[in-house]
Image 1 (cartoon, helix red, strand yellow):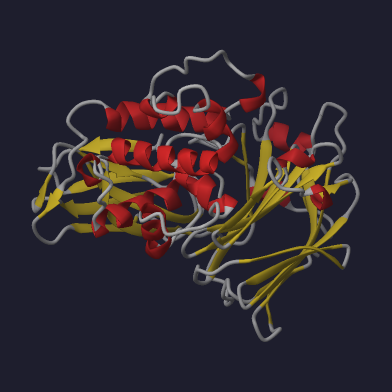
Image 2: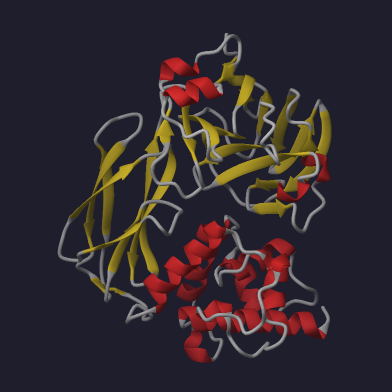
Length: 425
């Protein structure tokens, strides 16, 4: 690793230490510091870094630049999209914290380093919620912490969950409840109370968090299941209230499809850009280490749609896997995540995922021994491996820009046994 890259990495680590007040300014991180950092990285980027990896980085025990996904994970907690943006923002004044400290950059705005609106909103919220006031200090946990929940309905959405918590053994200035991955869905709670209720509007396998100051001290898994396929639409990824589609409107002739007329009857604003999502959330009898997902999809041709897109999400007990296909010419927005490995079209050649999505696409995701292979039209086009265990498959989500159709869904386990099959007949 050349000197300049090493200096950037040193800069990145120092900013992380300053942000979380690790190591008393001397870079001597404790075990709990590493655990908290690994946890925050996983929540923000979806990338899981082992404690041993983080410890090697802080001990400078490496000869070459760490893997790009590792660098992306590190800078995600500082509010940067990727390693390249971090270097661009820290080129002129490498010793002066800028964006990561919540200040405006000294350099002019660069149109080639646009930060997605969702990321900016999350970072601003993080800065307001955690960087101001007395929340910098680490909470002191003196005894057991209680955090449990019960759904008011066994299945479906909306679904109120009644959480019971006890933080009497925690010394901290403030406490928060966060519904799931989105930091915008976080509320302050009273340490003297014992009950907090929250409505879940999306199906899925959510990981509720109990937070003291800026540290996650407890989690609780909330599995909001569906009765078969449940369609909904949203206008942005951070929409807290989606538009539900009447179940009778989702019925098709040998395919699962909702047209613009059906969406209009459910009060979807067709003048706005929207994503239609089909959720099937349940406990599938297949493990994320070894499975075969076989499906066939297409996006409806719309003249106003600049970049057609489709994303298939596999929900697991620990996180999500996903594959994003894009229309020809829009390959930069393609992406794939299997396990902790995330490959993004902005810094990877994912041109194989540029497709004519207005035609039927035969798609397979085959995972064997944590080695994933993507097939398109029965041909292997991309492979990547991962290391961590993400548990069982607990949900499938099909996301279309605009409207689209699903011809069939077939899920097999490690032995090739078909554990789920829907031909939509």
